[in-house]
Image (cartoon, rainbow, N blue to C red):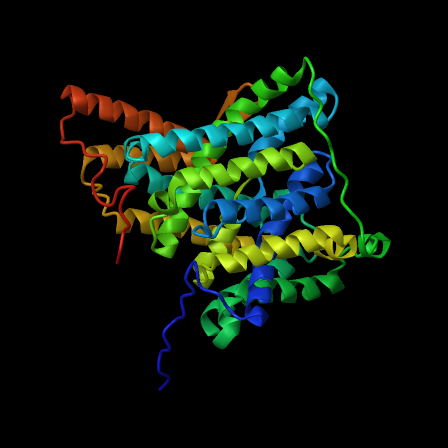
Length: 440
């Protein structure tokens, strides 16, 4: 009879031997790479500059947060639509960069406000029923994208062999998580990606043409911002996306704290997290990188492996910087088939969804109370229904729309409770609020 071995948990500040850190860092890089590279490709930008600035930005973020938050900053999807609109209206990507820099400044301003005003307001605008639901929606909203990449959606016309490759990749990730032992137990995603890559080769899903053409050493193309009379137009087009990413940032920080068992909102603090992200975006926006944000894929990796070390995240950032300066290495990673990415992301996005449900359980959300039932029901339904509201160039849908809807309803409930109109006692701080850590 096999004795169950306790699962190792690597804390936020723990350092691992370099031979363990490197593959763990590569695992994080693989998890975020597909999405991070896709954003600049859609905007017609050299992915190398994004890889470089995301790596530098992650280091800056880690230093500003005093190494207290294990978060990787990758390219944000929220700016694809407004960025595309600016390019079509104003003529070039460089016009959008001033908007990206203002987005970073917006986060810095929010950090200063939160520093002096505190974070108790978070429970009022996003009580546990809303926050848990929004976190779950983050994973559920992304799930169809993973399924499409994996060839599990016939209407997407997947290439031959896509489904086989993705399912083998997914199987390795799933069974690796529960069967592997020792160090291999904490790198199932990396192992799955490597296996999937080689399985994809006979199906012709790996395009190595870019690898042969790429140089060994080179600096990615830098784009400098254009500031003129059209800059205010660019800023106004970008503005709605700033609020979306703010909600996303808070949600990611809370779920990361929930996974790691620490109160990251309180220490090192939401203000430090926003400040680090804001400074990173000001710098990266100046040099031409697309805006970055904390990444759900990397949160999923931590939830699966229970390796929360900020040193592993820093390692991923350093590797990203090195790869951006060695185009041939970058080309190898860019040749990673979407079938493989889709396979591992089915697992990663599912883990994020479960983390939201776990939050509802650990914060003891009482759904026998009408207001919690309403908040949870609306947040979930709006988030996964495909409902979309267009605000200028930005389409609010999925997690963003569910978060905004939850915030608006929560504010009404709080107002009604202050006026004595609620038919139940309303306490947005019930259970575990933003100043507490839900402990098992």
